[in-house]
Image (cartoon, rainbow over all chains, first blue to last red; front, side, top):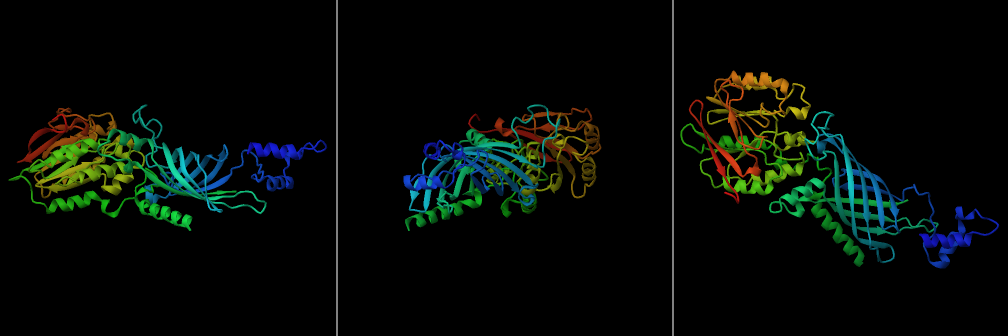
Length: 213
Length: 275
């Protein structure tokens, strides 16, 4: 992103129009075609880059949210809001999740497809609406040493993306992903019971879609 | 179309494993139909079984908290399966540690390897998070009773702290009614997780609870877990015996035999690597 931007800025900045760099328009796409680089797609930093829809992974029957791409799109931070209906959980659960992933390899698969074979990361989730929601003063400090509503865990997965572009030539990929994950309490249970439990016992699977916008 | 092929393979694989792996929340209650309502299933099964011991004797294994002791639970099952003349196994609550569905299933997968049926009463850790709904789904009611071999067993939720106290749990009127209904039995046993001597028992309900038990002349004793060790005595100096048993971590369990009016024998079994 940075080199393209510098190139665009250097070419777009003329002595007579010092503010054109802030309003990239047609010249950028011209540059792109001539250099073969990705088109400049400057948006405010706070604007999310993609929307996410996921099922499973312990963060909702359905979880939806938005995400940011950082560091050449290899790092992503997704914020999701998940929901589990009473029928499946005894009470209706709302789950807020922050998930950070790193996908170091991007492999092209023909012209229209792209694979990210490895995604590693972690998540932190907070569940609201459990049956026994730990009223203030219900327990002495440290009575239960663990949190009943905050979970952390690792994530490992892969992603398959379909490469789309806007009419202006900007990339708008749509990706399908799966992730295997676990959480602090499952991992602790496994570590203390290596004979009885296997890694498979503590894994959960999530399936999801990510679409750039 | 190599890419389509590999993509199809990934999708097929994922859908194959997804059924058991896709978890909406660790607090979820959703279970396969065969793992729901185990208490009712077990009691029906128990009524069909001939009694293991001779005469009017009922002989059962009593053990406490299985919470997060899966290695030990496997050793426990192996040990109990080598015992003879056991009618059933009773787990005195805290089946799970974090009140999560997978924990209940991990314990059940091991306890269902027992050659005899097993029954449970709910513990305080089983009521954490959505544990109450999970326990009700996998086992059934929090308060229940059954008759077996001339004995009435009354199992009830005494985990008052999990409800913020408030004089609701244990349900003393229900207990009184159960103690009065003596049809078809000659003696009574009460089982709960938290004993009334513990600070997690609702202090406002200790006097009515112990008075209700005192009023039952057929009561053999009151059995609990929670404290993870063996204790026995009459702490309220009223002729009512209160016993507590080991947790799975202690590699010990009790075998209790009941006969006659209020006769009983308590045996302690040590198992596992240190036995």
